Length: 122
Length: 375
Image (tube, rainbow over all chains, first blue to last red; front, side, top):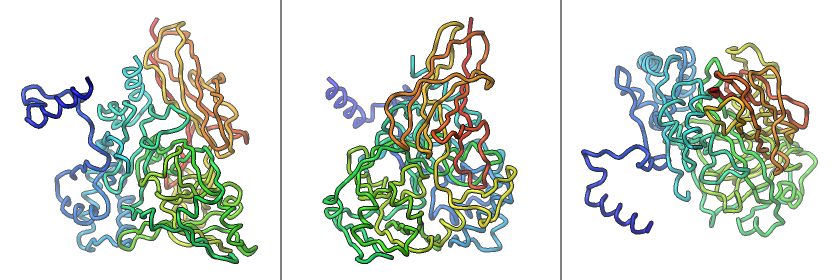
């Protein structure tokens, strides 16, 4: 029976009939994404391009988005990252820090961890 | 009942907004990990999935500093060198031919609970789930060093993994005191009776019972006995604990700190109802552990004034966690706040407030849960 249900679900998925546009699946019915497959964008605004270029080469945006740091703390973080090889031109450093403080300062409460399926046998 | 209650419970125990979100509540399903970073992957276990003595491999938290270079077990070897008479180079088959041992113990990331420290500190914002309890099988470090002919001049064990950092990021090279390594560290190739999963350090990692996860080198490729500790960022700056903790928010220079080693005594609450009725008992459950190495007792308090002992489940091993349960009978209607605290075999008591430190390590304040009691 379970195999039959799986086969029917697969067929419906193949036909694009599920979830139907007028009947969105309930969140509980949708399998969460696999670990490591969801990468959230950075919020728009001045400095986003700098953050994308300078930060996302080594880690996804999540590590930025979950911080709640003061300007002093962000400055220390950026100085450390520059020492570690991040290519942040001196002339752009203030704009990058301003972007990070604006979006991921002490009042930032928007971060939500992504609920994921465990990675398959890795 | 349990699912609804657990979801409500997750919302009720947390003070920070993102934890109360729908996405977080959905994590109460048992086969879920909470991803804190897409790459390199960092993910914690939902608290309400940490209810068994052994944490399943697929639910075990994952911590990476950067995208790892994962060795091919067929071509992997472990070098044992330094102050030894006869350096060794062992394949996985060689390692598995040696007498093995199994230990069950807690692995906790040093930064577990970092998100709960105030003032806030930078880094991965772990909450409760960068911890798990597993059976680790491998070869004692002592057996390897005995075979290599350890010299008396050595007092530290330098450890190296295969992963390489990006850019100019310092390598994650570490060391630990040789006394501890000889006492009970093992080079583990199995986790919960399965080959070590790739994200947990295939084919072998160091297991250091009772010590924080920064000592548990993954993708281990070299052990080197030396007279001095390892140098570098991950020894001299990171993973250090204040010699004398100052006021919260005060950042100390590295020389006023020392390498962090043993885990602090800690309990957490994994199951509790969000609602109860006066006079009708309900059950609160959780786990507790310490680097002491054992848990002597866990207590629960309604309000934090008086405490009553919880029941410890019989299953236990040194440095492993102890599951506990407590039957609480509400006496009055209203919102009740229950706290838990553990006491370890060394007499240390879990504190009401954790020791603030600039890297957010070893958060271990009392866990709390709120229950709405009706007449």
